[in-house]
Image 1 (cartoon, rainbow, N blue to C red):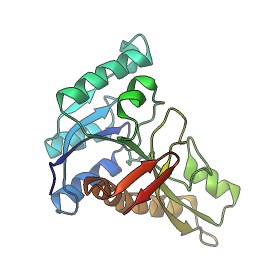
Image 2: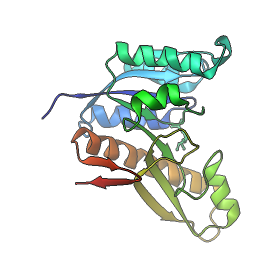
Image 3: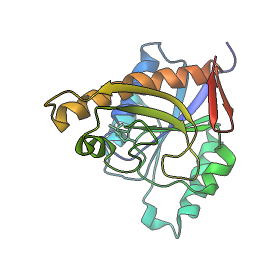
Image 4: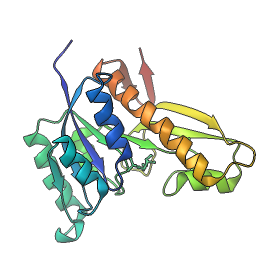
Length: 203
Ligand code: GRF
């Protein structure tokens, strides 16, 4: 196949999606190289996961920079250093500005735990649960400058069961994310995803 795809994963928290991606690579289900973890929280569990996997990380404290543009410029510099082809946001809890969007639009994706455009933003699983939705799910989309607004690549749905607790729903959503995200990254690796305005086509 064509030249290997080099990815950077962006995360701020526990990193279970990071782990699912790393595990898919190790299992041979995903043919990419994870070259970098980008993390804005030095205490996050994902940092330890990257260490264990032998994956280099760029960990920074946003407060040490004068502005969002400034730390994003530093990130762009690191991405170039590592020849990153695809930016994979997995629980990266920061808004992205033009500094990153401009050079990487169409090469930056995110996973969100609802069926967008329903329930964007924080606590999406809880939002759907509290709203009394009957169906929810997960979305993988390209990142633009908005909050969970970019073109949708893939979605997977599940029924919210009668009497289900928020905990079990959360667990099932995470399981779905861990399946879907590596799959979508592999489609991109196989060059099967085309972005055309707001529409995304998969061959
Ligand atoms: C996931 O639910 C993802 O959809 C959202 O943030 C969460 C990250 O979880 N954007 P983890 O750090 O991958 O465990």
